[in-house]
Amino acid sequence: MAAKGNIFKEQNKVQYGWKSLRSLSADISNNEDFVQKLKLDTKLTVHDGCVNTICWNDTGQYILSGSDDQFLSITDPFSKKRLTSVRSGHRSNIFSAKFMPQSSDAKIVSCSGDGVIFYTDILREDSWGSNSFNCHFGTTYELLTLPNDPHTFLSCGEDGAVRWFDLRLKTSCRKESCKEDILIHNKRAVSALAVDPVVPYHLAVGCADSTVKIFDRRMLGTRLTSKIEI
Image (tube, rainbow, N blue to C red):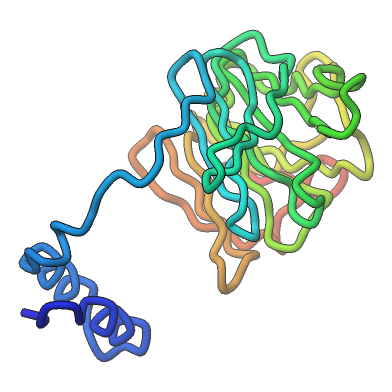
């Protein structure tokens, strides 16, 4: 067991491969001194409904959250001040919201239970709720931004589609049964997405058929290039 006060030194050993995560977990759970120091630091009351999504900005200064109240909030957790409350345009529970990279935290994408995705520029209040993508059929579960890419994002949903949107080409789409942006089509719902932080063209897809599927995004394309059936 790690000595008192040495948990963070033990954590560094994991980073360099000198210690396993399982061993570190055991050290933490057995270190009474460390566990007793854990406490609630801040409670932010910024929504009037269940908070379903939360993420930090790239600098760790602000938190973006979305809720059943259909609002997006940007909060400074250190001053406990809500900086912006955005009437998103969503008419259902917000399930996922992300800052677009390299946008100075001014551009946000969000999705909700009715399948609609909104692209919001918080500096242009007159445009809030006007840039929507109605492409998914059924719930849109998650949005995924890509490291150092301020222009594109991915989405997944109940319809089994993983879509790849490029904001340089369009900032909204209201076509019925639109297939332009489908990157992957799965026979069952897709409920989770993740990219490898080290090799970001590796895309992991979590599916309702109890599988996780890994793709190389360099080998995929939308309708203009190619589409893969799985």
